[in-house]
Length: 242
Image 1 (cartoon, rainbow, N blue to C red):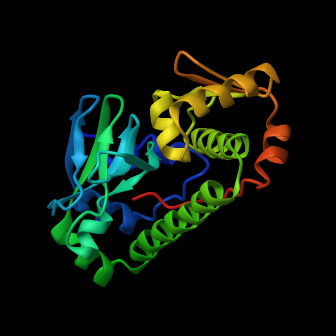
Image 2: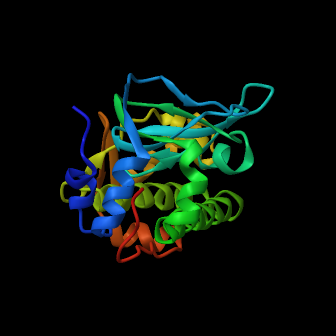
């Protein structure tokens, strides 16, 4: 069963804007189906020219870049609501890769309709621009974190960011949320070695600030985490969803 845009479970969350009747009609036409994938499935490959765009409906994944020597930089974590493939739609090819970490369900859109979206649906086009601007803002924060913060500061910043995203999409339960990633994935996202990542998590657990065990992230002292990270996490009142 393909999820009707009118019944999208993500839009039921307070973080997302609602659609007008005309916008809903367009989104039903823009969406051409759904795709279910297993963990480890490549969704988009760097250098590829995919004919499809995606929104993650369920499950989590990774955006990453690989160097010729095999080293990897995780660009961002993919959560429900993430829009994927815009680079290929605008630039002709993907500049990074995307892979499923858990079983995922993705809304599939026909990339050939992207230009029609900009021509006939200016509010939807603005939403895409907003999403791209937010991604740019996040990458600026991430670069600041990697370039100017200690390992503990990076860890607190990155995990606070992840937790607040889970809150917005209804995946958090109190101070806990799922974190189905390996420590290596977290290390690659924060620009740390695996050993340094493990030691930093141990220090934070010993200080009773957070714990990360069995795929569950628990933030025990969020106020102290914000002080360590030096950045107050900003959350827009409402955000668009494609």
